[in-house]
Amino acid sequence: MVLGTDRRVLVLALARMADAIANSFLIIVLPLYVASGAVSIEALVGTRVLGLVVTEELLIGVVLSLFGFLNSLSQPLTGRLSDRTGRRRVYILFGLGLLAVASAGYLVVESYYAVVLVRALQGIGAAFTIPCTIALVNELATTESRGGNFGLFNTFRLLGFGFGPIVAGTVVAAGPYEFAVAGGGTLSGFDAAFLVAVFGAVVSFGLVTLFVSDTEGTTASAGDDISLAVRDPDGTHLLDPVFTLAVATLCMAIGIALFATLQETINTRLDQPPFLFGAQFAAVVLANVVFQIPVGRASDRFGRRPFLVVGFALLVPSVLAQGIVTTTGGMLVARILHGVAVAMVFAPGLALAGDLATEGQSGTQLSLLTMAFGLGTALGPLASGYLVRFGFVVPFAFGAGLGVLGLLLVVTQVEETLPGAAEPDESAVPQD
Image 1 (cartoon, helix red, strand yellow):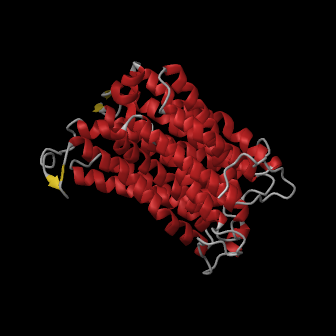
Image 2: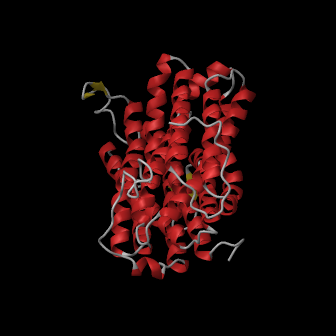
Image 3: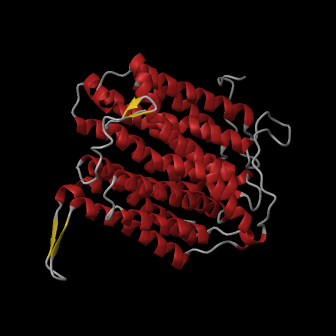
């Protein structure tokens, strides 16, 4: 046990961090790789597909978005498969192996369609890894430790996701690399970056192989009676609470992803250099890293729902403020508050869903939340890129509106799962 956490949870968190570093590497590397001429796209640029003129930017966007959509939409299927068979570890290893093989594929592909195929395989690999890992973290926890476990897990994942892009640009820029051993040779910066992605997946595979096992309860409760509910089966509320949390998570994730698309617009509006945008972008991740573990552990003591309510209540003004502020410092403060709000929602939300998950159905039910988060991060940039044409504040007003929806859903459709937990004062919260 480390800081009260099961060793297997810590190993899964470390494995997820290594995997996140590998995947986030490619967010930076793939656009540079496609634009560098290493992949043949000349025959595609300028053609029309479904009435749209194909541009280099569109081709890059397809490659980046494909991972998110395939990953997210496949997660309920892979989560259900792991529930039916009562096995998590084997699917985690399969997904990590597929990620490693697909990442190695970038070393040999030369056509754009081959890059798309490799990216699709990566998305499928992640779809096996993520819901099964989340389900196993849930099953290794107790009601008293679930929030802390998810806080720890999310912290390591975010560290990997935030650290990867920083290193990726350096690795690419420092190439080519000369080798004096084994007859010598040259390795391009792109190939070096792809090898780092392979290495990250291999490290994760090794950690899970050596130190992680399925729980006895998972295997014993495997079966075919697995379902997802939209309506509350108890009839207490209109919507099933796990489904409600998934919709609220989607609202939160879209709000997180609105910012990245607007880099040039934000820099012009605030009259700031690009590196300050990078600091503002990272502020949400850093605030998450700082607050995930303490918030998760506090939710084990004081309850999940109070943090969800306060988190969404803070989310609304912090997102809206990003469309209103006119100074660099103001934007940084708004982004930090946004990150704190996300931290108050994410770990307690997963923990509450884990509390509610039926025995043997963690993979299926928790995959709703991980799918919702992935879809939100894929849809957010598309939404902001479209809505900004109506005014700079509009994308952020849209994100704040989604935050209000998430708040109303939590207040009206979700009950506390920890006996005796304190409830927040909801007298000032809008009711249906």
